[in-house]
Length: 319
Image 1 (spheres, rainbow, N blue to C red):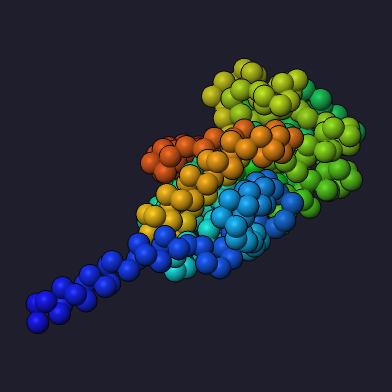
Image 2: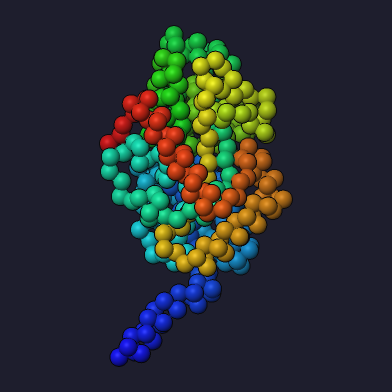
């Protein structure tokens, strides 16, 4: 009887590495928790194309938006741990939502496992050319004296929190106008429907280059390597520690076999080191990273703690 049980256990636990080594035998789906056209979507499609080439298998990007990214993230968090459903996440899904929402239907670091931080971009305050301010200092002065509406990809995004943090630090009168995704938020800024947007860089780059939008400031602590002429908000007195970036990471369902995670990590690093991928990322003002799973997990914890402190300062709480 003991031999029979041992044999069964061997079959049970010994079979996972075998099928994991044969992965992927069918298309892999990459979930983006926002509509097409935003930064996460752009990065995901670049990565999916390259991973498809590396594994000689289709990597299909799916946009599952809603609930501040929680619908898409929960789709992966509740999936089978077999490596066929991945998540390209931004801060909201894994580091911010747990500080804003009382109820979440997944645990970011228990239900998901980090693979690598792919890239980051600064957020940018971009305005319609008719906007009265053109520098960070002019912007702060204007927003202290009158209401300024600003668009973002949605409620509870890091873009939203950045605007609320500016209000808390300098008693400005920024009023949030949420959209369903980055593309419509930026489009309405280009048309002048709303004069200011806080956006990731990828959706606004073509509009900055065509002068259909003007950049007021980036929200990272340092200037963007690709756009060094855009000042950082941290250069303004009172904003010295202001540091908001939009980053994008690759995660899988917790419990995914290590063999699959290791192969995904190696392939992702290879993708990020590819000159063509780096050229595309640079054109979107995105800086490639490619850290280890342990480093990415530690980074998420650090970001979550940072956002917890900012949420306390802004008193922002969502249902």
